[in-house]
Length: 194
Image 1: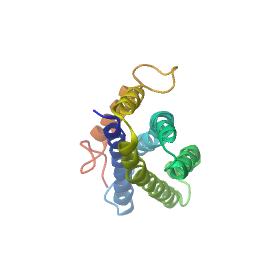
Image 2: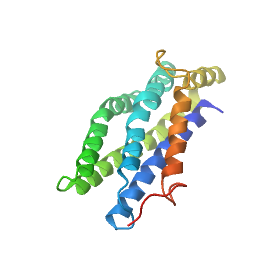
Image 3: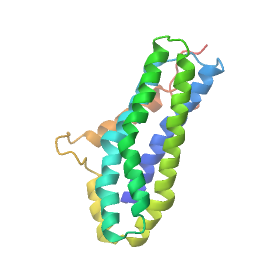
Image 4: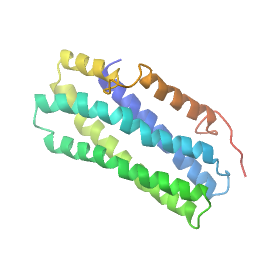
């Protein structure tokens, strides 16, 4: 599998979890689903941790850095994307705090969580669109086969040498477990319904 395909696959997996969260939030709001806070926490944990600990560091270190070496065409876009990567922690903290308040039964908790999720989902959708419409096409145009091979090698390993060899597999396992636990039509499992 090529590095650009890995990037697109990771975007699709992340988008699937975001879509699943949106579906659950709508189902809860409409009374079709009771909140399953364990599942909601697991899904929020995935969207919080995976980009920060795996995906963004790889984009920054392997894709963006090499692209900046090859061309200055996308310097402004890359700078903005790198700033978004750095600022994502704040968005995620807001989402996690909103879920904590909702699970604790605080007044307005559901609405706060729904709004925090909406902001996160809208931001992240636009972020991925920018990468897929501007960065990946440029990379396909300017990278050589050797560039892609180097990026692919880096992409298959975690940039943090202190992480275990199973880091990528752990995230793939977490994704599969979420799919197995989430109710249809977003997953294969079942949760209590109301």
